[in-house]
Amino acid sequence: MVTLTANMTVMTAAARKVGVRLKRDYGEVEQLQISRKGPADFVSAADVRTEQKLVEELSHARPDWGFLLEEGGEIKGKDDTTRWIIDPIDGTTNFLHGIPNFAMSIALEEQGKITAALVYEPATEQMFRAEKGGGAFLNDRRMRVSSRQQFRECLFATGIPFMGRGDEDYHDKVLAQVKAVIAVSAGIRRFGSASLDLAYVAAGRFEGFWETGLKPWDIAAGILLVREAGGMVTELSGADRMLKTGSVLAANPHVHQPLGDLVRKAGK
Image 1 (spheres, helix red, strand yellow):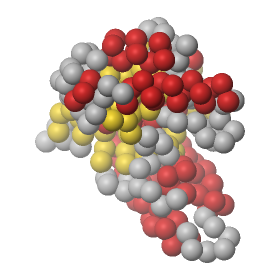
Image 2 (cartoon, helix red, strand yellow):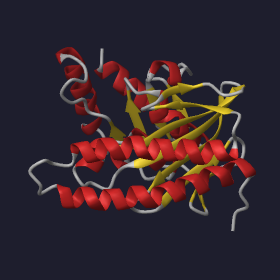
Image 3 (tube, one colour):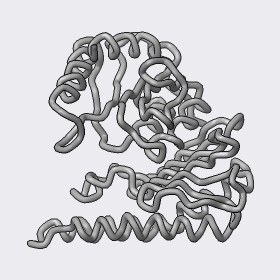
């Protein structure tokens, strides 16, 4: 049994407690698929409720810390050097359609650096967690990125835009990147949840993941997971401002640079 630090104990307890209700909500969504009204309003309410409950739980344990929230925006704390970055349901569209690939993402930011991270998948009860300098874990098992080096053996993940996300030029650029990667790899997966994509890179299930246009709450936790599992995370350009730019390239150390070279060339 791995001994948790005080902050990670707070994070895991909050995620598990709130996750029980979210998992029950997910079961309700599956039943609502056949209704005329549809589940969209229900899911929107579940998203807000989950965020509020996480704020309540974390505030109870750490009352002076602030928040950066997908739904609620920024909430200043008395301690302006420390805040939680939260996405209550990353993969809302999956949740809406009764697909179990969705997660809570919670990151702790101190002095502008992510120091603790948790991605929890309630449907499967998989908890991916990491603390800076302490390694990454899936439940109680240590995680490491994969060691595959040959693209023909590698499985990658990315995001694919949808209606209202980007213009035609952006869509064409993404499709060109996908085409370039599928031509040399074992395949691409499109999960619809960036936090899970990053968690799966950390767990060695994907060799790499790239996407642009993301928000801090989509990626803050996942970045630390990958790094603590021995992987590399940068922007597509190679810079290290992912939370500001929303551009992410995460991979094991063997394929990080060649994947970036391939994607950048295809997206020109």
